[in-house]
Structures are given as C-alpha cells and as structure tokens.
Length: 150
Image 1: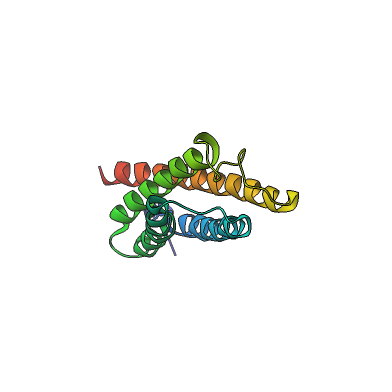
Image 2 (image 1 turned 135 degrees about the horizontal axis):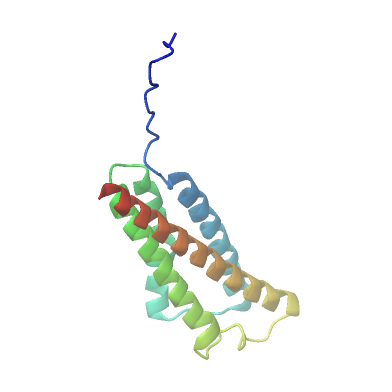
C-alpha cells in the first residue's frame, strides 16, 4: 500500500520498437511480390540478367533477412537493411513498371487476356504501394530509434 505523501515511481516504457509492424509489412510485401511473380509467369514477361539477380537478392531475400534480424540485437542494422532494400525495390519497380518502355511496363504488356493484364497491372501497383509504405515506416522507425539513442 502506498502512503499518501509518497510519490509514485515513474514507469519507463520500453523504447519504441517497430518489430511487429515491420514484420507484418514484410509478410504482406512477400505475398504481393509472389502474386506479381505469378502475373509475370502468366504473361511470359521475362527478366534481364540484372533483374534476375536483383529480384531474388534485393526484393525477396534482403527484406526477409532484415525482418529476421529485427528480432535480434542487430536491430539497428536490420532497420537500415530493411529501409534500404524496400527503397531500392520501390525505385526498381517504379522504373521498370512505369518508366522504361519494355514488356515489363504496365502500358506495354505483351498480348494476353484482359484479366491477366489487369492482374499484372494491379499487382505491380500493390508491390509499389507496399514498398512505399514499408520504406516510409522503416525510415520513421530508424529515425525514432536513432533519436532515442542520442
């Protein structure tokens, strides 16, 4: 029981940790990327040698590794890796799906049925959207963590 004049102790909440939110975003990102990969297969939109290295390395593996590392003592490194991978993936996807003229551009898709072409277009937009949200949230989490350390 506390005395009337006794000042209650301040409880300190644990420092802000974005682990769960970033893990959920990474899971959503992975599922949307797999969905978009199915559209690539259905429309037979191939990738260049560079794209064949970038997609598994940066778009698939790096966010998964970063998410696993978020749950270790390497959280600072994980946040940098997560944000960098998501940002690089976003730039890559926007460039290839909306800027450069190629069969990978949503406006220059190869022949196919409308539902298949819509699948490609919607999944490309969903990938860009999830990567934009993950980049922003990862950046905010990194900024908050760095601010809390100082």
